[in-house]
Length: 222
Length: 118
Image (cartoon, rainbow over all chains, first blue to last red; front, side, top):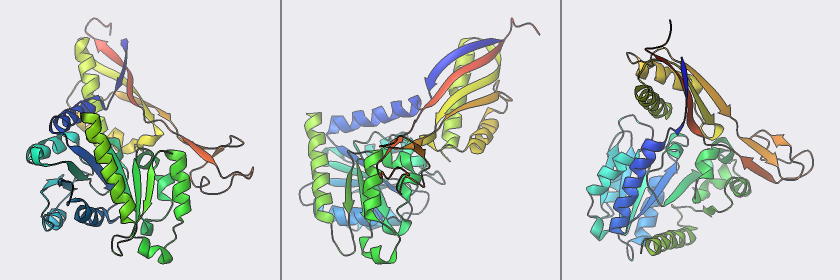
């Protein structure tokens, strides 16, 4: 019997694939934003509201990740935004190789920013670097304010948390101050936004942040 | 079920190491998993058993060294559960810090080689 010390990180293969995505993005000067959150947290609705405000000065595209159906891609296509649907057929998270092949189907020379809407799930997507520049987690007030401490990996890696469906706050057990406090413990650099896409409140600060993220990224690429 | 992807990476890495050393069987695999990964042990073991079937890793003993995550009071330093991090510490503080590991590391393998004595 022979004991071999290996000390190899198991995410190496996946990270190498994410590096390939980063290469494609750098070559084309495109920013990739990975949008994550529970099913029904309002990811697609946030994207719709954001795209309406961004598309005047930024050329955007969307990769829609879902287990099944084309419904979310159709909602984005209705806005006239280029979109590709990624179907995982039961897979609970997107992987970088899937994002890579979808990116190659877009005309990247005509795009500044690609949003990836990940599969609705607060656990698995946190484990996979897609090659993105920025990670955003959408947390609706209807889910409860305990999610940050229950899913620390997801929130710890977020560059921004968008607290959504703020119009439902009077009906929900959700203390936005708790989200801010726990986010401060998990990742003090993360920005926290409170929005209602339906009532169109709180979107300006969030859209400014996206703009800033894209600017920073393109400066970094130059 | 990110456990399936982890089990596949674990198997691939172990098999590569075994091939490099000309092993005929992998007896034991040791790995270290940080609490942040939220890995379900039963799912990981089940996935590994299925994926390793028919390979030289079939029947390997998988030993997992878990690295737990903790919420710690920023004032008195005591460790609290995730459910208490939303409240006030017994010392009166409401400041907590989070310490968590996202390790996902194959630490070592025990290999049986041709020149092993039975």
